[in-house]
Image (cartoon, one colour):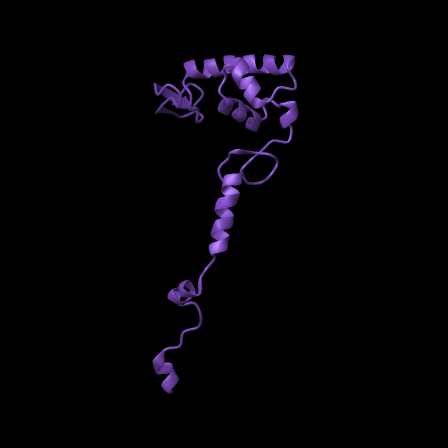
Length: 138
């Protein structure tokens, strides 16, 4: 238990794989968390100076990974003017252009629906009403 009475767990940092004590489900160690905060400040300043910049522009200009920028957008910490309506796939969490599912998931779901349930599968499941032979003879 920590000073505040919250349980801590020893885990590896997702970025540098260093062992640290995680409180409240944190996945980054203090060093990586500080570097992410510095990256956030750089991104925020760049967006302030270049409000029309897209995710790729911001990422290449600041050196901050686009996945991290998308995470901040998802959390609502930053917004980009041309991506104000950005949304994320309900199945795989990939960015989409306002739709519920990304293109990859749409293709996978539609191919699964097209296959459907064949008549053979229905017979194998034994769907329907079953009557015991002993009951029929009475």
